[in-house]
Length: 140
Image 1 (tube, rainbow, N blue to C red):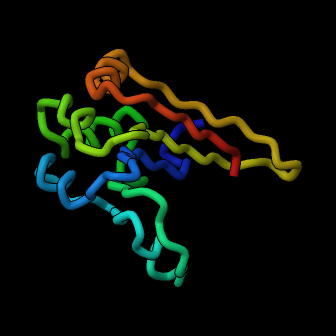
Image 2: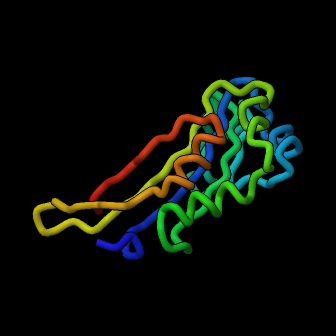
Image 3: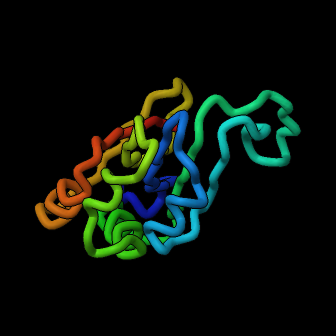
């Protein structure tokens, strides 16, 4: 299967109890796709959740408007400062990670194959962040 037919998202998540998303935005010079301050109601406004967030969160995400997974990683990382050490040096940071999410198409029995490639350049770029990478791959 070609990954063009998959639902794809690549995101960086920076989390921590003392993490201030406004400080992350200032340090990186990039506005997040989503952020939350500890103690604020968590989740997107459409959820109407009144539970206070237990940690601060800053997230930058790109979705399926690019070709391959490698293209998505390149696009996400291009939005960040060239000095990627800033991602690890954020004050209050406890749980940073980069997530690659790919959902494919399942057959009638819920089985399916999701396949994508990561070039050596993409792997090197991922390593340059110093962040752990989470792969979430599911048949849809």
